[in-house]
Length: 338
Image (cartoon, rainbow, N blue to C red; front, side, top):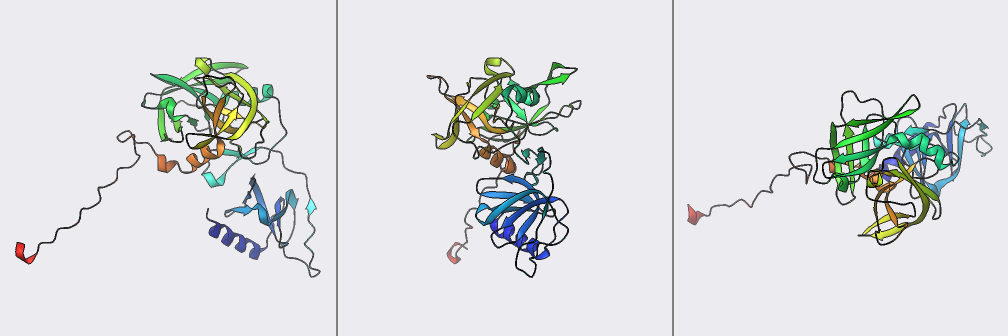
């Protein structure tokens, strides 16, 4: 969404001045207010769903964010020049919601809840982590939504189209392994080392999935953990801390973590203690210990938001679209050539 479009919509909203009953309120420096549903609070902006559109509001113009506010009238200031007093109501329960900016392909956490133990989160999220296999290698992945879209690394499936995904479903308190072989490559980006897959098996159930969080919001030293299949040992959990958020390798910035990453972890999720995916594990330094790396979640979201640009086609795996050759310069005959 361009800044011009964002602030045009913002101006229309302020002009309307209507506040729905029970909503989140973002107060601005000019004593105006935006009401709606806060989808995400980022370091430099706040994303608000106002019903007919989604606004991205710069942090520099925001004075206060109030969750679960209630009002019966407009945001227009009374004659005294003071902003209208708004009665507070209890904040809604924290839960993931669909991010309208991304067409519902993946989810983000609407509110950040309290930190939980790795043990609790593994039991809650482990079913969404899968093993990705092909005739030449194996790796990990995780579901983005219940329809079977999942993320893994490009290098896990590079040069392969015969892909299967092993999922562990919880049934009656037990884990049951199920292998899905109708797996389609939707999009892939070799340079970002990311691939988007889709399970197309007709008997596939609704899949457990995990929300994507913000790597930018992490602080160095925070605890993180990874779930994957190192050396084929499925559902292996490793825990560590975030060593740095800006490790430059090959011209890109990666998250560096002390959580153990090994071959087979590639494509699996790196979680924070809120249960959000903050990175996709993809490599390690083999000559040392505790030197694992992950692709930041912001890069993953960019790949997903622009997946049409990386769309995969069986007849042209190197490029999703075939472009026509540019026309050559038209040769005009001169009078002497006639």
